[in-house]
Length: 449
Image (cartoon, rainbow, N blue to C red; front, side, top):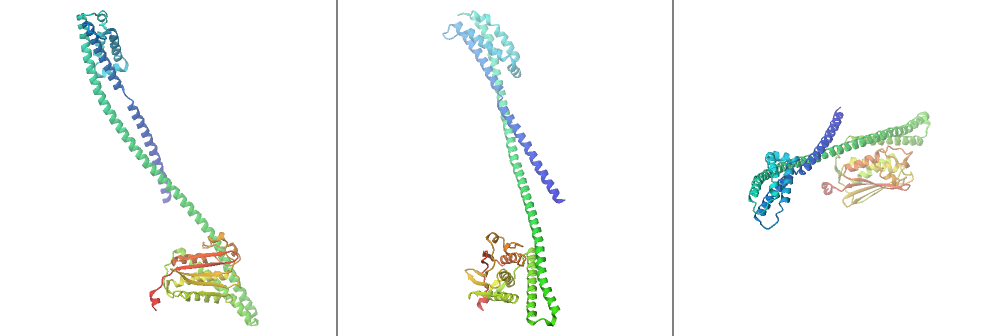
């Protein structure tokens, strides 16, 4: 139930983040569009230009009339100036320009001025040198027009400044909102990416855990089948031998009794090793035990293991080559060390012909003690050598030979527990060499003794 709630919360968080991402992105786009539209608004600029043009046309017409009456040399095309002024006034009195002039408070005066200017046409048509009265009338009409246009231009400029400031503030606010939205979008994008990565990792871990569980289930199923077979084989040997002894009784020769007793003992020893290896694997699965390190005589430990193996397989030859400088006080766990060597030596005997000896070589290599167990047995193919220390692994060449596939796995894990390594060198059909390397840490008390 708790996992379902976490999953639902994760989906809700991801959905909310995606929704917020979309909303913020849409808001940022709208604000950018509004900002771009705001920068294109230039009515005030156009109106200021139109008022300035009308103001200039009025001044130029008044100047042209003064030149004509006073016979001042220069351009004095009064009709052209008059037509230009009328066109400027007509522009200001129509459409959006008329509404703008009304907002400035000059719509009424502008209409009156336009009417008055149109009434000057007759006075301007026959204007000659010395016609001061018509010129005075023109001046009286144009003077208030010029003044009102000047005031209108000033008001338009002030209004333009205010509008520009407001537009700049609006653009700044919009830009700030867009920047904040973009930052929020980036944060939400990072959150969404994090959620997706976590979801992918969770899915990957779930798949890995499921695959490991399936592999483990299959491995344990194979292990149970294998162990049941391995138990049945020595029990069958024991049962067969004991039945034969019971049936023949005192009639059975002493050497036959000894031979069958040896077979029983060998089967019991195999059962004991099988049980011990299985239990050791289970103990390691429950948690690696803390090694009890103490001074250990390496040569004596090897001889003890070889002697025990000789009791189990008295017909097999074990050659020992132990260097003279082997430490008598190697700091390690003697019990775990002997267990590793017993596994290696037992495997060497098991997987090699009865006529071939098994060799154990121990030497010192710089800061390590190396113990190699060699056999001339079936060997391991190169394609399987990387799997040999895996749990329940059994080589294809070992089919038909009793074993659980736990011995080398346990030995490798125990070697790491002691701070060492267990390495393999093998050629199929030639033999195998397993080398245990342990740190060369020697007890000073033993050396002093």
